Image (cartoon, rainbow, N blue to C red; front, side):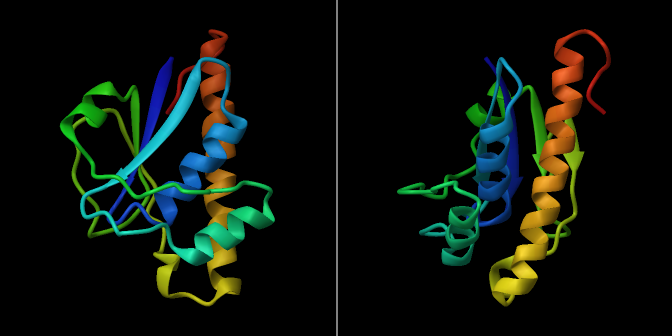
Length: 137
């Protein structure tokens, strides 16, 4: 099983949402995990609410610390935040997304929509590369 690791600061919103979308739409042989450099205590309630609207239950998901083991086990790393995001040494794709944690639900919904759009693009690229027709960029 190949792994995409989504990374942000608190692992409470952007990376958790990206992980959930990826796992819902993952190409065969792929899965996602997520982590942060300074994990929050809980997943942000607006993230849980917006994902529930998508039919994805985050349930008892807890933010997790980014570890060397997670980095070493990842085939691809996607950093989903901006300036405060960690620098990781791996195959990295950077998505500089605004932090929706302090946004109103309508604004946060737009960020979640952008995460979904980018995840679906990544899934498409990985599915294509899995069939030998291309490579992830």
